[in-house]
Image 1 (tube, rainbow, N blue to C red):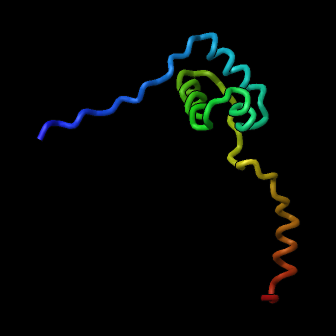
Image 2 (image 1 turned 135 degrees about the vertical axis):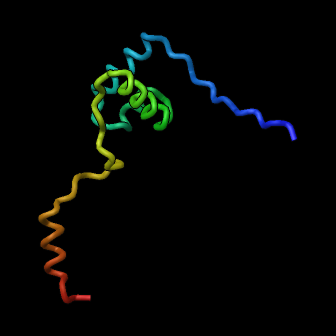
Length: 88
């Protein structure tokens, strides 16, 4: 049986100007969705690009993984749990 060739994923060639624009956009954004919307790229492309740049020493900020959810009010949730104890 012939050896199966590895499929190489082709990476989009990005010139340094585009990377500079990406860094400016990333740092100005409040959430990943803002970057995705502004670039028109897939979320995976944006996160992979940011990870690549971080590995190269570029100090990009990290967005929370809240998936767009608002922060939970844990005190309120704790009070709710206590109020529901014993009420099935």
